[in-house]
Image (cartoon, rainbow, N blue to C red; front, side, top):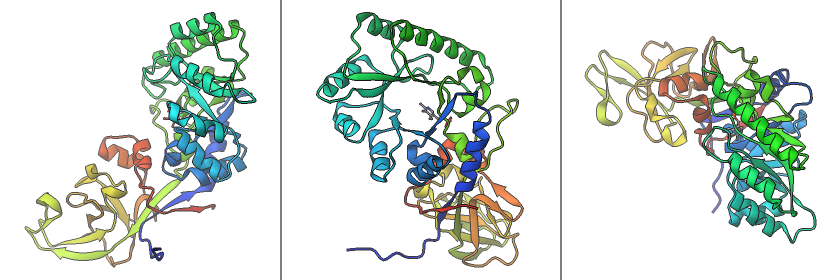
Length: 377
Ligand SMILES: Cc1ncc(COP(=O)(O)O)c(C=O)c1O
């Protein structure tokens, strides 16, 4: 049974002009010869991986990075043909999709290298891979000892081609740059080990957005920006960031209005009590769509250009806001959860501050069920 499309009160608008602007601002910070591999994992941080990728490619991005083979397959099925690197761990069960869709795996474990080498042996051409080295993140990657053992043993599978060498920064946005400098130096050491072992690696990369802006010595041949493309960063205030524009805005509209008398309460567990006659607007968005429950009684939305505080606990699909001080309110009024309205603005960074997280999580949490509308200004 097909479902008839209906009116959708809640929409995430993705401003592709802002995306392209951020890309160009970010590029200004790069050393000559260093290129961008755009990180579009997690549905392009909630922005929609397919449209985001298409736009970035139209503006000169030649490589993408995703987390999983499944994310890579979805981009291939949408007709995207540029090289796609799969950053996340690879399982044997995913090898078929890697081969079938020309995805480039990041290998982080010697046993996966062996298994992948065996699986690729029947292919006509070697499979390009990127090797990940652990330099301080404590997550994925071969240790320096494992790398030395691999190079000395001359057991790098001939069915694989070492296209890339990479690592990942743990503290690029931290206050103390020393740990990052240390990671850069360790990475240089591992690059030397690989080159002295006779490998010419065309693609060398370590930096995310923050690392690329703050540590030019981390540029090598590629950098892997994610968050800055989407208009945010988490750098300390003392570090000069590029001029960025938030790409995504999230809007809904008022579903119902009611007046609560003094002593009346709002939402589950009655955590909001009216002190005076209070006008409450009901909004059709809740934590199932990514509006964090931590916003209960502490976040704001914008209505008629003014901030309206969230009243009571955020529900699964609804939230209530106090609109007592905003004149002229009506059912159907536009409500901005992220974005600009008249002279007021709420960013994913503001929501992150109110909820004790980072803009990344706020953006990624926006449910895929909320329609994304793409516009170029
Ligand atoms: C391996 C890797 N590279 C690059 C990025 C992009 O980082 P950012 O969004 O901070 O630019 C990420 C993000 O999580 C990542 O995991």
